[in-house]
Amino acid sequence: MKIYIAFIRGINVGGKNIIKMADLRKALEQTGLQRVQTYIQSGNVLFASAEDEDQLRKKIEDTINAAFHIPAAVMLRTADELRTSFANCPFSESEIAEAESLSDAESLYIAFMPDEPSSASLAKLEAYRTDNDQFRVQGRELVLLYRHSVLKSKLANNLTKLDVPVTVRNWRTLTKLVALANAMEEPEK
Image (cartoon, rainbow, N blue to C red; front, side, top):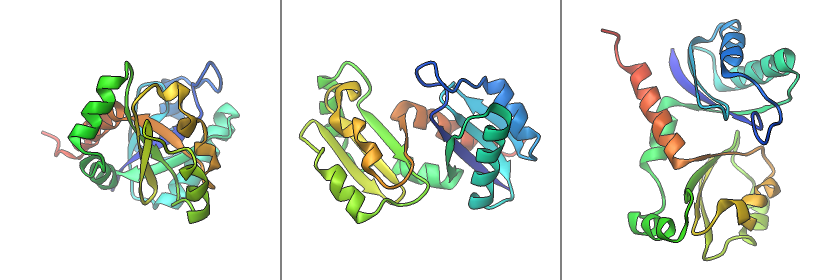
């Protein structure tokens, strides 16, 4: 069995599409997913399964729709893929430190997508890259660096220009999810 992390787009945001994590965990356990655990309310779910990614994505999306009447998009990564993303941050420590010194909020984020975006959609997004709002493409992910507020970022507000669903998490959340995935893979004592 592999450890997977599901990033669910658009739940528990701005008072809409509310799902209690205990209810989500129970619904996913009933589908046969093993060792299900959630992290914070923004739709991060860790679990073990022997199924492949496409089957799992459809199963989770269908379960959320059936149980909660919410058509949510799900992005999946294995624990290995998540560790690789975390270890290969394309921004240097000095770039991150500079951005953090200019912002009073989180500066480093990662956008997860189910598939790689097309060159054409990335070209559209390129119009929103500035000195203050940067991104780097890593396959099915964009790593985003904001030197000012993400809330006022034109880049952040235009991720919908990509031709695939996108859900974004800050680097602190990614750090915690990597630690939780590592703990799930440790042999039980």
